[in-house]
Image (tube, rainbow, N blue to C red):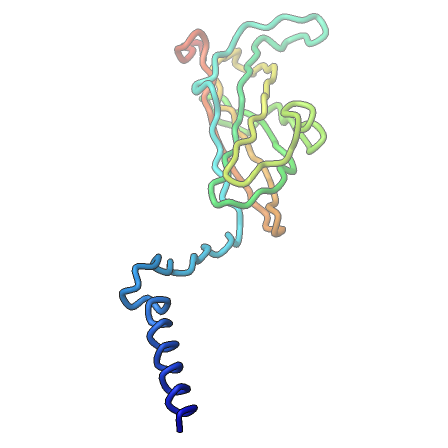
Length: 180
């Protein structure tokens, strides 16, 4: 009987000693709720911008390119905002005059060209890829003012295709040309 009493007292002591470790008034640290991570994005989200905007057209003269009277240079920047990277596959650049008509001077920049201009064709998750671009041009009317049309295609790390379009005006000395 003595052993039973000692065993019962021992069990009561153990139960009382365990209470503070259960968080009931023992003064210990509270247990933090588990951290839940947001689900990974299902596709990249790209936006495009051009700088400067508007582009400034400058006079151009080179005997190797007779008739091409104007030059424009700018940077097209691709920004990813969803958290999924990928690759820029190509950029197509052409332009139209204020009179409209079909686009002219189509330039095609493939992945290799983009790498040469920007150092890479990869866009990072939540990052920017800035691609310096430029072209010389002429118009049938001699107009300096044009609208540059940019179409790009990319694919993200999940294989989703992304097509982007952008326009930016080109002006002469900061104002649209009145010579149309």
